[in-house]
Image (cartoon, rainbow, N blue to C red):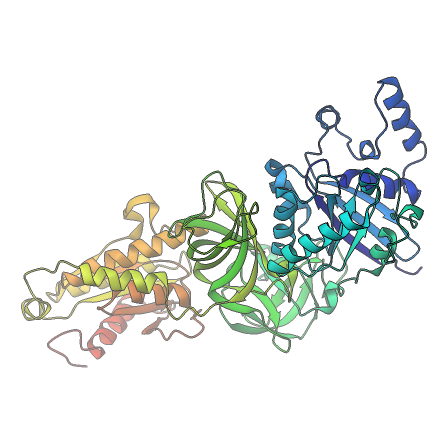
Length: 599
């Protein structure tokens, strides 16, 4: 059996411009309705003394028919000889555009309906912006209700010219403009004799002419990590990296790397629930992988094939965002970003332009993005993430933003931006300029304490004795008359650095506050000691920045899970605490922390 091609189309337009009627007529004229459906709706209209409208074929909800508007994105299906179609009827009212963003997320082409009698409206422009923001580059404009303007070619050409100028302004090149009358069925599935002046395709021909995107399993491999499962029963020591393959395919033995951490391994096995053993997996499959090495990775990383084009990795990116939040999107405020399985805080750092959909011109001076505005922005995440531009791999370039537990915006990434500067670096620079220093100098403290200040961090997996070692180190330094202070991060406000932080965003705040605390402790001349579990390279880099101008020493308990960062010591869990404390003191002496420096 030959697999038929299928394509998703979104249809948009100002309220009452006839988009639901277009779809209803297409369903009826292609004989795609259930048996008796058309007659049932006509009979209902007759019983209620209402004129029949093809839009009623889609308005399934009673309150929708009562209001005469479509309030949610309806999905319907019809077929041509060439392929199958999934058509998304998106709401026209401005209050319902949030639903439209969800419905249009995977559309490959768009039909944009404009009423020939009413002309181009605010939402006609707004939907044009939204189609552009969603990255849909196959757009056909249907100039509807041509029967109300006597099938005038001049009216059609006026709308075509004006709207083409508008779409060009927002970098959308329309495939075609088609004059139609959806109610009369003109130029939908057959040519209209009333508009003989029009020589282009009718709507059904145009739909069949749209290009189908390449199959997702032919794209580079992308596997966003959803979770890591560990098994211990019956001596099962597997660690399974689980998730759903977004694009591409993979097989046992392939070399892969995880981004943004950069860790490299090979695929040992492919696991699937209640299925026979398999050696390959492809896009759309929910699977798990065991790896050639037991590496530490976090949910949100993206596994990719080493031999294929790599995603972008950065903490800064340029994006188009459509804002739906009750409160405006403002620079400097932290929001939550969700991209594939990544969850990270994000901040708007630059507004390039804000497009008010009621005007043609973009504003380059506006300081915030108000509800229903479309904006081109530069964002910065709290730590680097892996992504693709939406033009490369669509699903890896779309994101949503959350404000106060509600989805407040959606966007598409156009490109990565250099992250040589960052909000953390800017914060540290401003903090040091404003730092009101003690009257006692660093040199005086060193002379009195007989040692230099240092931030000593002990990290590693949970439950392997880090806290016990940290306290033993503090005790040993105190015994030798050095000014050392251990503070368990769980002692700080809001569970900072607790052993099991459930929230990715809270962990980001934990590291920020820990770095600020270390800066105070080291400024006071102390050897500040603490522990925090499962740090990665980016976490350490952030702590180093926050602790400037003082230094940090890192000891890793157990196997070293850092990719590029060189720790100051590896603590062997098979050795006694005394021997491990002696190792840490030895490393401190090698760093010339103590004035009585000797090895």
